[in-house]
Length: 378
Ligand SMILES: Cc1cc2nc3c(=O)[nH]c(=O)nc-3n(C[C@H](O)[C@H](O)[C@H](O)COP(=O)(O)OP(=O)(O)OC[C@H]3O[C@@H](n4cnc5c(N)ncnc54)[C@H](O)[C@@H]3O)c2cc1C
Image (cartoon, rainbow, N blue to C red):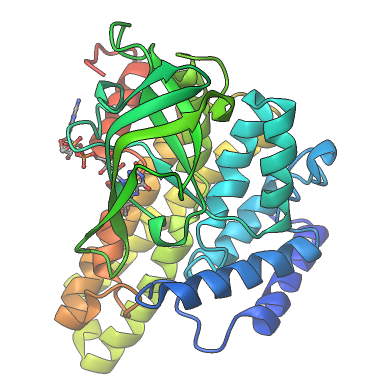
């Protein structure tokens, strides 16, 4: 087994580092969304510069403006961008799973309209999945859309929605057949954020200002032409999309950055002399490396064109668990000062990752059923 990067990979990583040195706005802090206008302008400028280089959608098929680059390229990019706060902003979702979902299920008109915008790097999306009573049990969602002529009329609510403050569109899940079995009867509406009847409510953030919002829909009319895929068949599209979402972010690199900062701080404040701290540093490092290897396995499967497997769940659990260990150690070493998003410890944000995109418990449930064939309620 050869774990070395190829010469091309090394050159590509160096190109990204040089690009970052040139393109990152001065004082960039991707976790500070208190000035949303600046955050959006900066992230769009960055994504457009990537698009100009041909990097933004390099993994996409050529017919949609991509270069059919190896999934390893996306992995390298993610390793360089995530630890510094993902300067593409919400556009990492566009590239990783929203665009591919539109490619897979969209009409020619939808592809033409949305994919061109995504690959140009100047459109932001949010994902409207979770509801007040449907998070882990997503198919239990209640937001419903009733067909009325050429439109759907949508009522309900979504919660914990990230990136709302910058979003132009919402990838919105709705029930179109409330009588159908749980996973049936769900459809996707590609909804412009300025649609009348869509109200945005602020939620005070645990992970930082402007991190979360609630969306409330009151008789919101969305043209049926904005539905992605067949009516009531949205779950299959979402399931595939989520498997990409789960390994799209290199959390092990973020964990490594936090560990490095923690070691520097421990040396500074004298805690490094404590053998227990040294043991924990070793544990965090081992967990991060294991997470890296499990993620590389998923990237390798994808590079060979294999469909998503439960390896994505394993990688996700390994990544968020390792990141959590890094965050807990950072909390001990930095104390309160390490809590804030973007601080040395970054503890709040780190802990939130074991909830986002499906909680660790839900990932474990899926591993139990898909790998071990154990009975599960999920
Ligand atoms: C940083 C962050 C960003 C997010 N961004 C978005 C976004 O952009 N769009 C969006 O739609 N949502 C988003 N979310 C919401 C996220 O997807 C949900 O919080 C998550 O799915 C959990 O749902 P919940 O909060 O309703 O918790 P619940 O589902 O109520 O779960 C509560 C607890 O019970 C456990 N649990 C529930 N069911 C089971 C089971 N069957 N077996 C074992 N344990 C179980 C869970 O693991 C959890 O610990 C985000 C969350 C975070 C933290």
